[in-house]
Amino acid sequence: MDDYVKQALEIVKAQASIRAMTEEEMMSMVTNLAASLRGVVVNDPVTMVDSHLESTGDPKKAIKERSVTCMECGKNFKVLTKKHLATHDLTPEEYREKWGYKKGTALIAKALSKARKKKMQEMQLWKKKGVKRG
Image 1 (cartoon, rainbow, N blue to C red):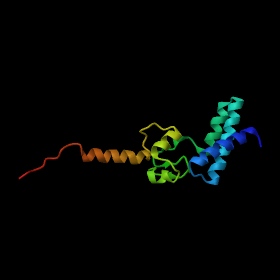
Image 2: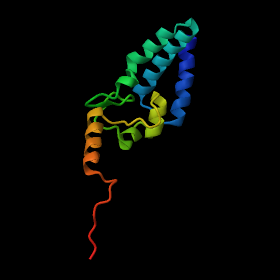
Image 3: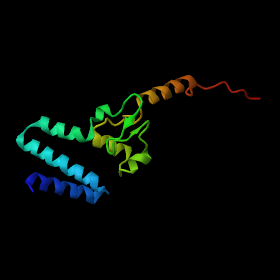
């Protein structure tokens, strides 16, 4: 076992002590970390980025027109809910931070977001409606 794998195992061990992880998550994380550590030592940032993107995909491409891909499990949704993220022991804020999203980024498909915005504009809830009092 090379030093990179040993270092990766120590990091994953520390992560697993903080939150529950499946065997598959641990193996994937060890593999990715070992490859990333090799890239750091070789000083080849392209290798590091490519090895990470192969396994998880690009977070910038996860929010699509009709779906949102969970970067933790790879499943597609219209909305990444608190309930789903809780299955990964993450809050929406932790998820955004982990995957590099800005603080206010909506974890919702673009089309659904546009439809909701349009509906809210039609309803104009911010305007007071004429209330008759008698």
